[in-house]
Length: 169
Image 1: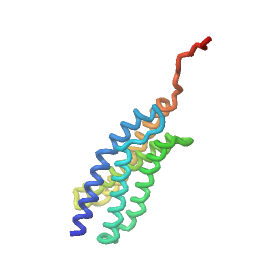
Image 2: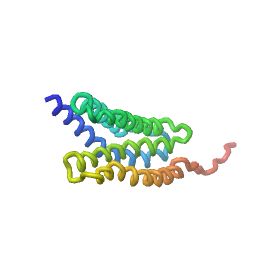
Image 3: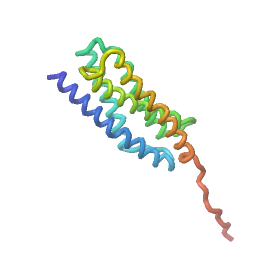
Image 4: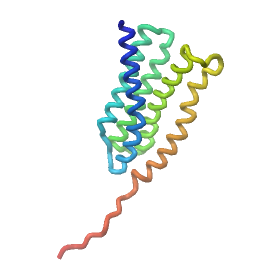
């Protein structure tokens, strides 16, 4: 009963993160042009990733001790999501690197987890091929994140050109 409830929470929060992640990154790309971003959807994404990570840690601790090494991976995934949201809200030096690789890295982690579970845990992929679901999301996603970051920077940091104002007499 407890395991089923935890799995349900884990799956629902993971699905929420997967659905919201792409939307949040797309929306933030538009909003970041105007300054720091603090959105409800971004906060919901961050909470979804936190719940996924916490439920994964509890599931590992109680039911799958052999997967203990996923707990630090889950913590790093949440840290990436937090870094992305923090960078979008505060715009510190090199914020675009932190935002894109934090937000995008956490989404890659969610994608990797989904693909690994779907293909390797009682799935059709076995043997040496089981390594591919772990590596492909990062190998494909990281270059895409860098392209996104390079497109985001000119749009987000371009100076606002204003028409000259006349002095009043």
